[in-house]
Image (cartoon, rainbow, N blue to C red; front, side, top):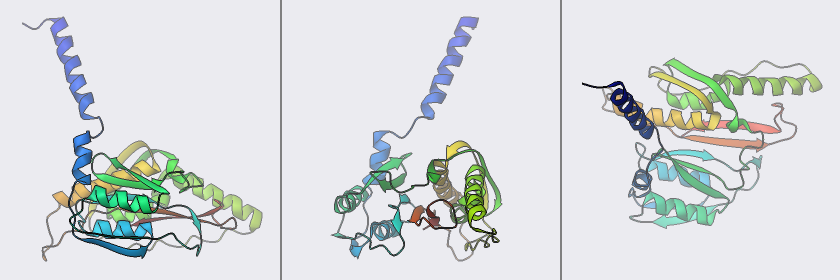
Length: 256
């Protein structure tokens, strides 16, 4: 016979187990992606962004990246890195890249995604990635890569903030022109269902990438035997005080 006290203890224990499952990745999980061996890696006099692209190409299914590029002016000369390694791990490559361009560091998100960002936080002068979104929902035919590229219109509070800033700019400068249409390529037949609450734009981008990996593992190949690989994201802010965005520059979200 289970008494009221025993029942309460069982419920509390169950809640405790549930809370444990919501915790972040263990050290062992983080080591898993960092200890992944990759094919021979070689870049010469390329920016950090290209280095991460080459790293991702060694294993599109497993190596997921979120990259916040240091904010810069248009046509500004980029710092470059050179690296050639054989039989190296993901962690060794990342450490070498960050040693050569010490503006950057990285962390592992949920044991799966490599988040590379500037140490001084100067990737996002306008603070767009930190805007919190109360509810983010995408339901229908849209590849995760397109969601990343269109985050500026799909995340309600972000879209509202950017629209207000743009409106303020043209209120000072003149008539507001029409918005250009989105130009997004990809398999638009891919069915997605993403529902997130109370997350920053940065966290949503990471979740979309992780979702794309789950989608890849659960979606059967097409008639040619191919599958759409998981995606990754880059955030690039081009500084320009005269930009018509009203943000002091132009933000770009790209999938790769």
